[in-house]
Length: 483
Image 1 (cartoon, helix red, strand yellow):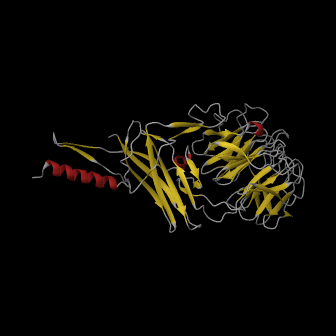
Image 2 (cartoon, rainbow, N blue to C red):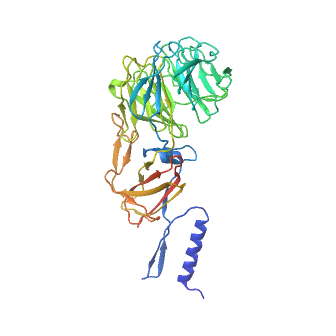
Image 3 (cartoon, rainbow, N blue to C red):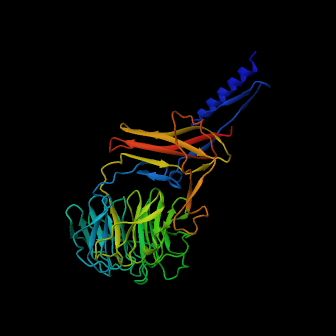
């Protein structure tokens, strides 16, 4: 005859085996009450981080990159002394400059062959060449060689480019362009045979007059276009367009971005499935748009003396965004995701100023991955004071020469870190929670049972000694219980 205790042991083992077969791994503990011979078992609760949103939203990142679906974390590409922003000054000038992001200084490049006016724009082929439309009602189209610092003529655009004109490339090797100038025309350009063609599309007219413009990014299989209009209440200004131009889907503008986009509006991609939008119109807001959830959040405010106006443009260097203020100023700003503030960088060389037709473009010259980086998770509320943590498990790969490690901290109190200079920063929307001042505990094995607290964070540290390799984090599962 099997004893009750032995039977319970067998049942417990069967439960554990059944749970392991699901692909989820957790540590279980049983508590035996010898006084009345009763056994109470528990199933720990799990906080799982696995999507790009989990790794990106309200987290702190240093030299790491969060990737889109299914959601991974890697070391960021190493920024070298050659990584740069290129600037078309616009304003009917031929000024062309390069800004070195690592050393924070500017150098002049060969002048553009023709004046750059409304609708001036450029795009990088991700290899060597920058292609540029001159705008200003012309069809001029040129190519800049980043190695030899010279320009060469390419086939003219199919029609004159005006206000609202914009050029972007995509990883299919093609370039896509808005004609602007009070048209809804969308073009496609093949650099391999220097050929343009017009796409069939139902885009609205863009660039009704020189008072209104547009911006565009081609990202994750679609073209995204944002335009300014005469009416700040007109919400029909943001579109998702298929690469063939046929399907045009308006995107609903929601709070906090529903105040209208003005002259100098700009758009670029961020990390993962996010887009960044500068409001323009002599305003200070920069927004982040989630392609997945279709939600807008405010990415801080630029300084009061750096409002975004005509000629303002965003660029993203795979770690953080930069933006020019435009409005005939020489202001360049860089975003600090930890402090959630915009800092003024070295001013553009006098007398160069970003004006209508100005464009900012990031050109990467990466030589592998950063040697180290880390990501601190958002703060998770377990729902109970003095919650006893149980274990931490993660899915990751560590190629030869790389490493990955984890830390955890918990507390019964948390600190709200508001977005600076934001009147709505106490609403729980524009800011994030943190466990400031709470010490980290290094995770050895999987047990974290010595840590207690209602609010919990984890941290992952990554390193590599091989610049061509990076560890990859896929998922983190943290288990906790109430006793």
